[in-house]
Image (cartoon, rainbow, N blue to C red):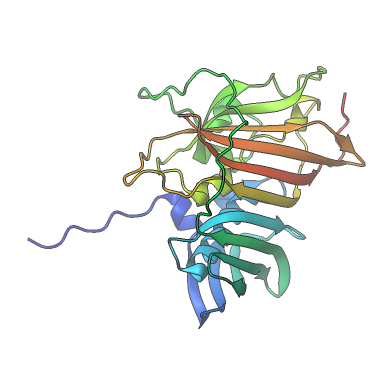
Length: 288
């Protein structure tokens, strides 16, 4: 009998894949292909591009002992579907901490500018005051994995590729005065274990929290996104591909068409997996 064929990667992994073009060591150049299926508004979903960029950074570090700890991305321009290049640079590699930069370009135009930190674990006190919201646990029964675009029919195309079980927040676009807070259990439509790539994606996957106060959906492009990864992944030797995470985002201030949104992502057992903050634009959106 021959060797069994390797399992084909799912859509998320195929569409965030990168491949080396030139370089080794401290400077690398990767190729990638932006898929049209992860579109959100005027361009590709920011979390989708974040996962693609993080994948290139992980391959550049090439050290499983050094986990992603911080990822900051500025998005000066949205790419079109098609080829992009990602150039990564190890700016400094110490005994425990690696600091990197990266830039994504398409046809010579800057698409994203990145700073990141990878690190081994450090000794220090363990303090956890952040508490997971008290919500109903995820429904893991067959058929409970509902695509996000069913929960929010006005959601962009990428929402059909992930599942959402809403738990936090009111009805978007209701025109009512209510907290700009939304959250729920997230997963991929094609189940895959939670890892830094999916956490980078999930940090921007929920509807923008100001949509709880706007009368209709409008473009809300991200200017800057920072993700802090709070634990090294995977947490288990054989992680469950059906595991869901609880993601929550909240805004408290919108001014000059700009808003800041803070996010947290939790495992079902209450472990804080990631925190995020982004600066984004509400294009022509009246707020009640």
